[in-house]
Length: 213
Image 1 (spheres, rainbow, N blue to C red):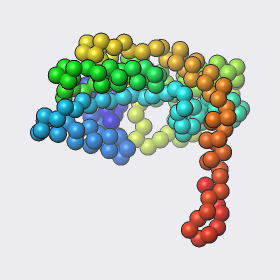
Image 2: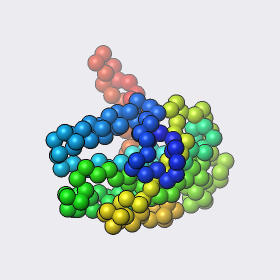
Image 3: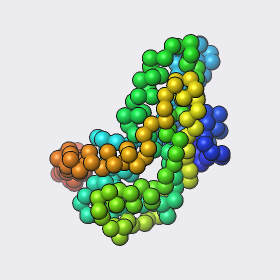
Image 4: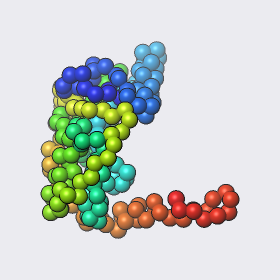
């Protein structure tokens, strides 16, 4: 919901510039909570997680899609030229930060806004290449298609506030987290193969006919 970074790293005071209806919906929810805090002093905290990844993530997301496509020797599809950069936070590190927020004294965090990121950014193209290298696959599996509407060029989170107030570290490096994620999908093929199968299962429509879903 921040839109492309106006400055780096993006702290909690960064302007909210949503560039898609999806991002606008998140921005609206964020401001709705803020209005309740300001009006009624409810004991609430606003959390803005950056991009997440790790085990059990749905295959529609970039990193699991890249990993499973590589494992199946299918093309890794990248929108635009792949230069769009994101701050990626491993899911276990996200949970640790959320746990710290949940257990912090309310007078210390009420009404505060916290970005949850690792403080580093990496491009989509770099991710695809790293996945292929970890799986000993060729970069020739990378395929480029048209850019997405409302594309955000760069996201990178400041970690200063979460460290100063919550005393929580940024989290593991992206390469370490990606390696763990690749290993999980390699070792849990039965799980993601079921997800892949469900995409093609026949469903009974209202007309009484079975169609591919």
